Image (cartoon, rainbow, N blue to C red):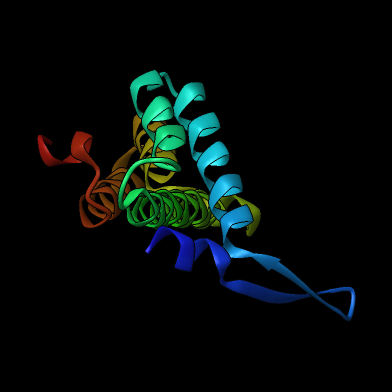
Length: 139
């Protein structure tokens, strides 16, 4: 099985040229890449296994599986990173449009309530309660 897998030619286009190389080269490159990742993140035991898999029986299956797992994790981390950036952008959108956040609105209503009197004070309190301001709930 090892000889059959290592002898498969894979062709790919590099700048419009069709280049062929044996699958064994991809397995070696993948094993060294996985070993480098494992060494970087502090898993020297897996790094040694990645390189040893090149000579071990069914090591190619292990390398392909490890490559798929690492790729899936990298894609997941990239998606989480993009989601985090989108969430931060969405939360700051109110500031981009000049609209204050709920906390800022409650603070402004509280400041207005403290300096107002009569009908203005009552209306400010009602607005604060409708806005869900915690300070207005107890008044």
